[in-house]
Amino acid sequence: MMNKKTLLTTLILSGFIILMSCAKQDDKYLLNQRIEKLAESIEERSVKDVREYISSDFLASDNLSNDKFLMFMHYHFKRNKNISITFLKKEVRLYDNKADVIADVLLLGAGAWLPERGKAYSVESRWIKEEGDWVMSRLRWTPK
Image (cartoon, rainbow, N blue to C red; front, side, top):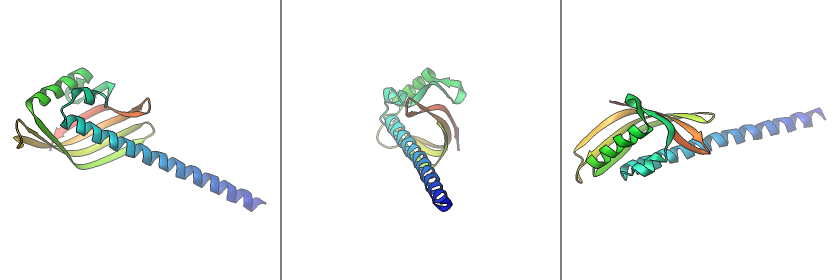
């Protein structure tokens, strides 16, 4: 009888661990999807769409608040008819309802078809879960 209880307990615990690891993988997958969609919104030069991916208490490099960051984005969208974002490396670290994303990114901009300017950046961002969706709450970038 004791062996059946031990076996049952082991099976229940194993199932719980598997479910927990699946939830983390799902969160990682969903966060990566949100990051890709944010990059697409930037490449499409849509301030409205970018707004969906940042939290209300968002803060970026140089103490850019939510509104100031969106104005910063709007300026660069007007300056560049074509924007390209390439992730050279990306690491996602999950903690409960928070995540840190560390990436090396190549950012290209152009007034026409051919890139006129470009630079690689080290980008660190903090993402939080709000109402079931991942949104970025912090962003810091430094030229490489």
